[in-house]
Image (cartoon, rainbow, N blue to C red; front, side, top):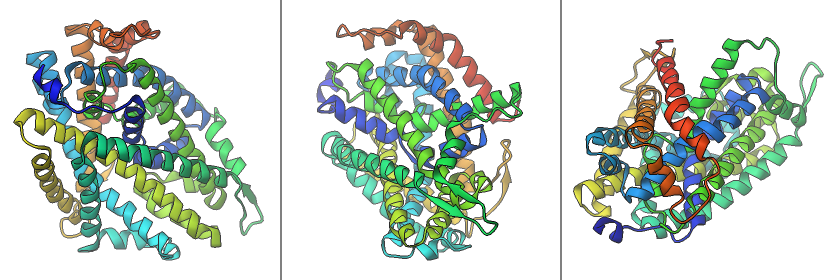
Amino acid sequence: MKNENRRSSFRGSIGFVLAAAGSAVGLGNIWRFPYLAAKDGGGLFLVIYLALVLTFGFALLTTEIAIGRKTKLSPLMAYRRLHPRWKPLGKLACLVPMIILPYYFVVGGWVMKYMVTFIFGGGIDASGDGYFSGFITGDIEPIIYTAVFLLITSCIVYLGVNKGIELSSKILMPLMILLVIGISLYSLTLHYTDETGVTRTGMEGLKVLVVPDLEGVTFQKILITLMDAMGQLFYSLSVAMGIMISYGSYVSSDDNLVRDINKIEVFDTAVAFLAGVMIIPAVFVFMGREGMSASGPGLMFISIPKVFASMGAAGAWIGAIFFVMAFFAALTSAVSMLEAIVSSFIDRFKISRRRSIVYEGILSLVLAVLVCLGYNALYFELPLPNGVSAQILDVMDYVSNNILMPLVAIGTCILVGWVLKPDVITDELTRNGETFSRRGLYVVMVRFVAPAMLLVLLMKSVGVI
């Protein structure tokens, strides 16, 4: 296969695992997982999430990585190689990161702004009311930070699989994990006495995360928690957006895929949990349970800076460390999305990596500027079926995450489970004689359970149920 012979590959399994884990450990784990855990009953959410990681998430992750290695192609072309009539699914899988990446560059620019602000001693200013809204509604500054973040991401991808993606993952991921662990441990030592004389501690905040809150638990609440955990898995595992197919295509045919997938599951789940330990106790100590009602940008750029301001002198350097860690998380995820698109352009149009990056970089920058202007000159509010009053960023996020990603995942399950049959994946996993102990679980998940759950999630996302 000519394309396979000229295709780059990761030098070792650790490079692949760290790159895949770096993609999975993005801002969704940092600003969405803690909020959902606090909202959905702490330990109850954790148990359901862990069960889904080991079943639902495992099936999707395994399928995409195996498709990538089997075809040695990008998401745009891999589905066509599997079955010519299913090439539209590859187009959808490539379209998802093309929609997400521009606004992810914008959010990455926001993270960079706060990182720079805290590093140079402006943490108190960043915690002030109106600081975040004042920044994102500015004329030029958000665009400049967005462009710089896009440039850094593009440079890493331009260096290629080995010198860019693999090397940066080997550097950034260990540093990020060390920072997450350090902040988590510090968060557990916090304590604060409010004006009413009530003292709250980090360990009490930890209980909010890990102890199941079964008060008023109903079937409907469990169903909501299940849907929330399923939605989080798309963010956490980077599935249904072509990334894992792209990275899987760079995995050596000699690597033990079963072992690598297990490592990615452990990495992702551990970091998601640590994100909760890092954020929930700190927010609980200084803002109480009501402080944990924020998610997304509200949590990252408004609530958390206020927590750092409440820490006194230590808050400045803790805040700087936190936003450096968040920057690493945003960068590794942005790199993976850009690579999924660039590899698709290379495979489909037979152009160079440099030209692919230039074309996608220009397209992303234009769309990212529109996202920035969505908080300024192009501001509007559009009600979405999920109840959000949306600007441009929210509309792009809704279309990609709530509609296209479930559709891609459903289509992949139907193709593998019913058209090609699951053996096309299980045979790839065991091509070197590896033992696939979860084969039976995989077949049941990819043929029956995962498509049904994904259909319910899609119907919920579009407001049908």
